[in-house]
Amino acid sequence: MVRFALNHMVAPRLGHAAFFDLAGALGIDAIEIRNDLQDVAILDGTPAARIAEDARSRGLSVRSINALQRFNEWSPVRAEEARALADYAAGCGAAALVLCPVNGGNWQLADSARLSGLREALEGLAPILEAAGIEGLVEPLGFPECSLRLKREAVDAIDDVGVSNRFRLVHDTFHHAVAGEAEIFPARTGLVHISGVADRSSPVSALRDPHRVLIGGDDRIDNIGQIRALVAGGYQGYFSFEPFAKEIHEINDIEGALRASLAYVDQELRAAAA
Image 1 (cartoon, rainbow, N blue to C red):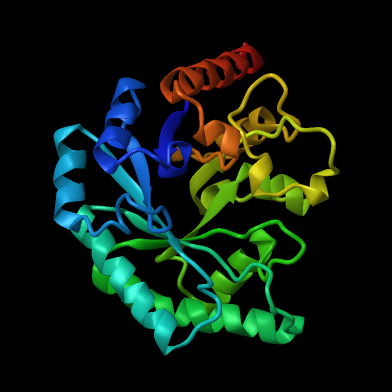
Image 2: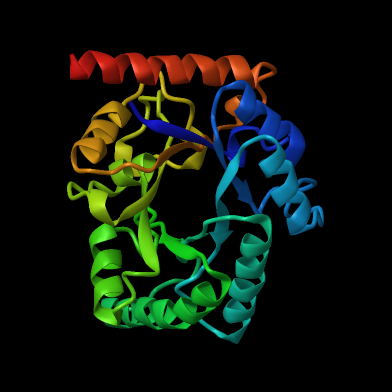
């Protein structure tokens, strides 16, 4: 019914080859690699060609590299970071580079400057992505302290700059819930990140990455409803598991846990379609 992918955040202690094998064992054919995990690719210096070959030999596609951070704080330094990641993406066969905005810190710009900076970044990124033959996936983060919370702002900026052929959205089910954003953009979405929240001790607006677990029957952010709405709206891309909770990262049998979550999601989607 839907296509699933794995983000390396599901098992950050695994080397890239073991992570690729995990995807294969689950019957999943797409993965996301990251540039923020210590002692594994990309940070361990693994050549892009090695990633490409190891993925290809297992029948896997690399959906994205996750991510260029603070992309909307554009500068010569950020441009060099973007070129390096775009080149690596091209070399490893990745289709896209995820773009994360400034989150927290000293980001205190007025809306006019904030949105102007977003447009400047998109204009600067477009030729870099085009040269590498990849697309940019803009991921608004729903946190109140984030410089880009809403997908609507991202879509408007992409259209204003005239670069809709090079940029699409990441719809993250967790960030969508935290932002309280009702609007979704299936036709403008290039990737969906999925993770559940079981903890009920905090209001949704106060949830943060450590709350993000695998999706199960205790999920409080309506992953199933979001997935159904995206599919009903015409989205045909991947739904990529991306849990950040420490308790998930420390599971000894992550394959079994993922298999159970996959079965739950599939069961709920089938029941809803019946």
